Image (cartoon, rainbow, N blue to C red; front, side):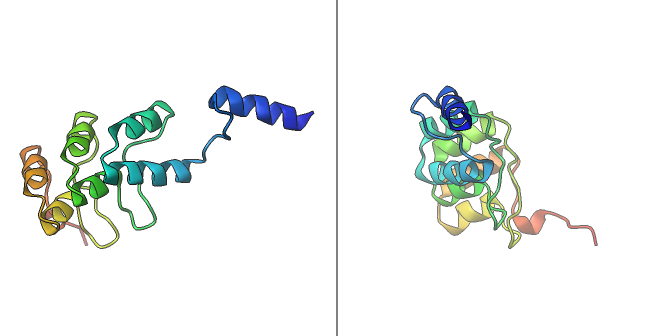
Length: 126
């Protein structure tokens, strides 16, 4: 029956038999993993097709959260993966702004070295 088809599909997608995650759930999980510095979880989500530059309802990206929490290795991983360095959240803040505001100067220097800018430096055409 139909239920069996759904079950077999789910177990093909995830051997544990969990239903496939919808994209918004994956973005939330990715942002959480970035804030915690869990590169393995991030890589598993990437393997499942999640885009690293997804954003939550406040337009905060995994890069924002990694920078805000001082997760230097995650920030470096995102840089290596070609993730955008200066996306703006709902309040116009960039990951560099977050790193500076939370006192993560090593992360701020890393972002600046690769060309990241603060929200104030991004010109918004009127």
